[in-house]
Length: 232
Image 1 (cartoon, one colour):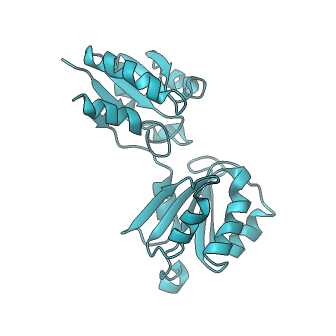
Image 2: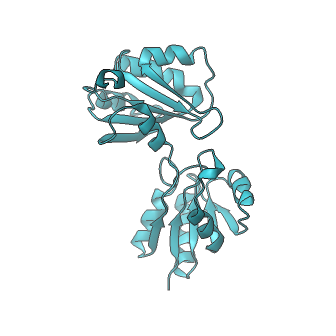
C-alpha cells in the first residue's frame, strides 16, 4: 500500500493556534518535510515532535519531489509543513501535491492557520467574493498585474514584505488611486498585531512614521465597493 501525503498548517505566530490534529499527525508520520528546518525546529521541539525532518523548499522541490514520491509509494506517510501557515499558499507545496496526484497517492490537507483569512475578515471589506494574489511579481509582469487589478470589483488580497511596503503603497496610489480604501494587517496573531485601515494615502502616511516590521497582508477594496464606514 502507498503512503499518504499530509499538508499540515502551522501557526503564523501564536503557538496556541496549532491544532490537536496537526500535532497528532506530525507525531504519527514517518517523516516531516519542512521549508526551513531551522525555523521549524523550535515548533517541533515545543510540541515534543521527534520525527525525522528533511528540507523541502522552492529551490529543491522539483528535484526532491521525485524521491518523496518514491518514499510514498513504498508506504511511508509524509507530512509537509511550511515556515508558517498552510503549505502551498504562497509557499512550496503545489508541485509536490501535483506529483503525488499524478502517481495516485492520497493527499490530505488539514485545516489551519492562513494569514489572509483573518486579514480579510478584519478589513471590513466584502468577504463573499474576493481574489487572492499573494506576492505580486517583483519586476517582470508587475505593472501588468496592477493594470488588471485596477478594475477588479472583488476584494483583493496581497502579501508584502516590510522592505517593499512603502513602495507598494506608492504603486497602489498610482494604479488604484490614492483614495482607494485598503486595510493593512501585520504581525497577525502576535504580540504587536496591528491593522491599519483607510485610503492608500492615509495608510502610507501612517507607515511613514510607524514601524514597518513583520509580514504584511494588504486588502484592497474592489473598484465599486463602498468603504466600511459608508456601508454603516
